Picture 1 (cartoon, rainbow, N blue to C red):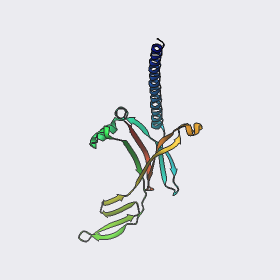
Picture 2 (cartoon, helix red, strand yellow; picture 1 turned 180 degrees about the vertical axis):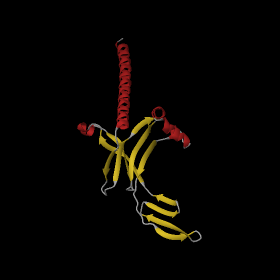
Picture 3 (cartoon, rainbow, N blue to C red; picture 1 turned 90 degrees about the vertical axis):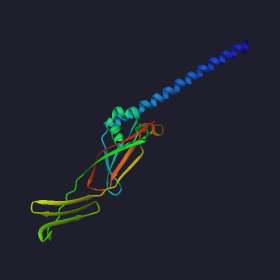
Length: 198
């Protein structure tokens, strides 16, 4: 009789332990989801931060979003449409990044007299530097202009500052996106990086 009671007690204890473990697991998962949603909200409302690297080049830094495929469709449907336009299934996407750059360059160049097109007089100018190449022909009241612009955009996703610095090593670091345009005339106006949560 005593063995039977021990067996029942053990079964109930194991069952309660299993239920407690399951509840604890669900609680931890909900806490992670809540932290993810709070981080996403902060990232969406935060402004882009600018600083200069060691060579004096402007660099931008912004937080990253972590969304599920269904959240991506609800919150940012234009990205879902862009993926469709690119013929990429959204379920296969690991991450999505978008950066908007504003370019502003003032160029002053002397016009030169030239003769081309069956001895017709025209004015021309050309300009070249590591980032731009411009060729222009001005004839009467029209301008034939060819502009080429060159740039390299660097993007790094890394673990940045701690979410709660006062907790020191017990606070996880949040993902940040660092973007740099090598063309000094460009200014990063907006950037978004989305990690797709599976």
